[in-house]
Amino acid sequence: MNPVRLKKEETILKNIKKREMLDKIQTDSKSLAREKEEKNKIKENIETSRTKKLLMATATTSSMYTCSPPSPMLNTLVSPPHGGRTVTFSREISPLALEKKKDDCIDRKEMFKRWHNGIIKRICETYSLSMRNFSRHRAEYQPQYDQSQFVIDCLSEQNMYRERHQVQQLELDLNLCAKAQDWANILAHEDKCYHKNSPTYGENIFIWPLQIVQGRKLSFHVSGKDVATVWYKKGANYDFDKNWRILHTQAGQFSQMIWKGSSHFGCGKAQSKRNKLIVVGFYYPRGNIKSQFHENVLLPTQESE
Image 1 (cartoon, rainbow, N blue to C red):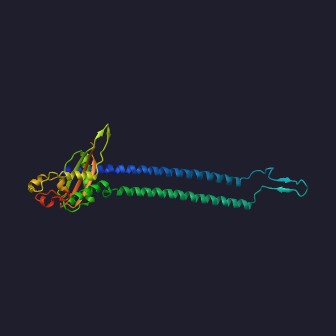
Image 2 (image 1 turned 120 degrees about the vertical axis):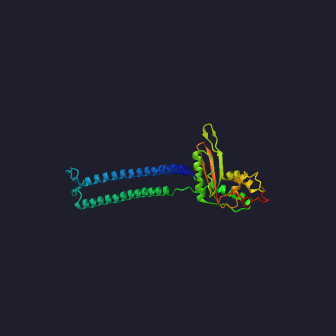
Image 3 (image 1 turned 135 degrees about the horizontal axis):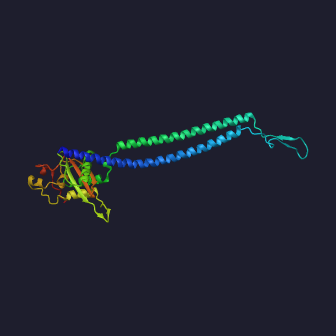
């Protein structure tokens, strides 16, 4: 292939993957920002509570150790109405009680300090763990082709048609899926439709125009089964008895899809700037090879007809 063309395709794919990664990072960053905001609120509440408790503890300690002039109400002589001994009531606190209250206050401060530090530590550990998970998620981000319902339906429908022609079932190949997705991205970026013409794997392309109604983009739902059915129906006028030189001119999506020698399949899809759905299917080993049509494109069974 032309080196200039290869360089251009590599640049397009790098830009597309960079944009996809940035979109993913932006989405994850928003969720992390929400988590961080909630943690900051918790931290502020803890700081506020800590400040209040420290102020209360300081006020209590000050009141315990502040010397004030004796009040006339501290020592009161109370004479019983019916005679008897006069009793003196005193509010003075003994040194032993003062020392005990001082120790209790220090213990409470120490407990609060440990509790507060533990909360802050857990918040920091949680945030650090979230950041590590986020970084690992960015590094491991890969499309899950084998979990895509579109890809699964497209593969199963093709295997159903291949069974009619008594050829082996296709297996999903994740590497082919990645290559097909790359090619679909390039076609969507250029808003064009043409084959890659790889010497290694065969190729089918599906284009579906998405209509624009009243300024809104309305995409018709196209399933993987729909794509496989369209490819198969392209063989409605296929003449199985003609010479391979003539059959080669009729080669297309139908013959590649039921090609006996193909054993693996990969699929990718993208939407172009003009709202066209582009689906690319890659097959390995490649089909539509000259002089091999009679051995690989077989007649359907009588029951399927």
